[in-house]
Image (cartoon, rainbow, N blue to C red):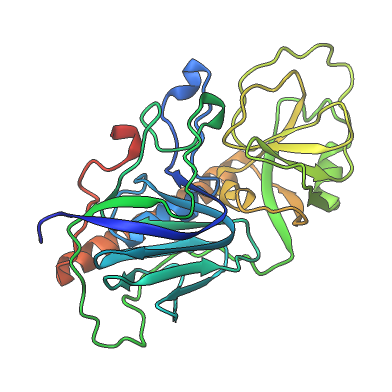
Amino acid sequence: MAPERDVTLKVRETAWLATFQDLGREQSEALGVPCGGAADQHSAAVANVLVGNQRGATLLELMGGRFSFTASEPILISVTGAPADVTVNGGKASLWEPVCVPAKGRVVIANARGGMRNYVAFNGTLASGHFMGSAAPEARMGFPQTIAAGQQLELRTSYAGFEHPYLTQPLFRLPVPIPSFDHPLWTIDIVEGPETDAAAGIRELLSSREYTVTAKSNHVGLRLDGPVVHPEGLGEIVSHGVPIGAFEIPHGDELIILGRYRTLTAGYPIVAFATKASLPMLGQARPGQRMTFRWVSQHDAVEAYHESQRLLGLLDSRVANLFAATGLPHHSGQVTTAAAA
């Protein structure tokens, strides 16, 4: 493997919001700090795997707009997430694949559609600040992690370029589990919550009606416009911690699906939970996105998540083998996760 070297990434244009990101903080919620991390954990993990990093390595999360940068030396990148236009020196590049960028090469990521976020991973270690062991933003704690045009990012990598003999073909043919963003109506799998039975008719309502993400949504949770049923006879609910993906019904007639920056319930009833396998798609939901819900059993929810992890593990293994065969640097055996840094 070539020796490591420092590469400067010059940000030329920034997105509506560009931040450093990883898979979030471990054990932070015991101290009252949300775990945070990439809204679409699947896309973030795959981006890192495709460039030979550990799944939790620091990368960039882009939300809308146009983002571009140049690199002082050759780099290996991948772009995942919502469908978008990606170019390297004006030539079209593919999402969900490793992409070779030559020295001084200009990368442009623009026109995201169908989803809300893109992820850019770089082979090696992207320098960034950390809060409670993670690069994930926590603006309420004074740790915004935003990236601005003109900023210089530092990357340490042993990647020194790769001669690809058939430039019109994909670099590798890999078993990448790519989600579909094409359908205008998403179906999200859900399981019962602690107050499901107290909301008479909520099962039938959630499974038969459409809901639309509103512009009031943010990193704490998605706010959906659609019919709700308020539970009865519960009395006061003591505010408590709650898993990601909880379906909360506040006093108003709206539905809230809590995200990775949620804290406590504020005393609102929880009538359902999105399955763990469905959370990445919820992390891509943008205002105007329509969705329906499908009740599944706990067993099926666990099996769906295990299958998603099996496919990710298969990709990880294939990338490790290919990188070893071609001499490309692979970091999955090294400590590069934010939580371990």
